[in-house]
Figure 1 (cartoon, rainbow, N blue to C red):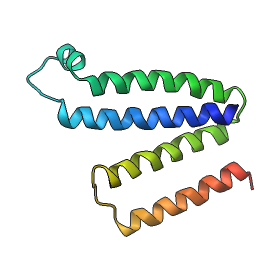
Figure 2 (cartoon, rainbow, N blue to C red):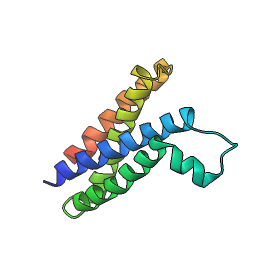
Figure 3 (cartoon, rainbow, N blue to C red):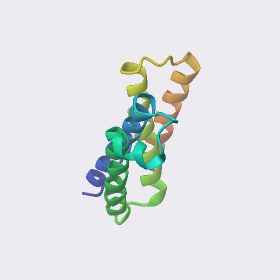
Figure 4 (tube, helix red, strand yellow):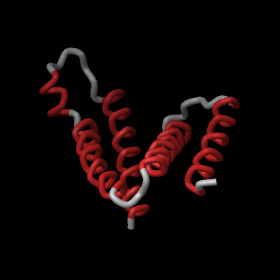
Length: 116
């Protein structure tokens, strides 16, 4: 069950980051005061809400998993989801060096989870 909570946590965290990016690009205006900006930007509000829910599931995962495993999984899987969205949906360029870095990060995460 702990890994299920961790999967929910990193998925919610990733979607929250994506919503903040969308809200920052499409709903941001310096002419608005901060309260108006927050109140009129549904992506920002949704992202903040998902961050809060993410914390609950991450907390539940940490009750059973070592931090030395849970945190790398949380960070790397979020990294993969967010960067995949950036590549496929936002069409952000990714270099060969970045692809190599992604492969090395995944290998590192595999070693952490396997506890080799």
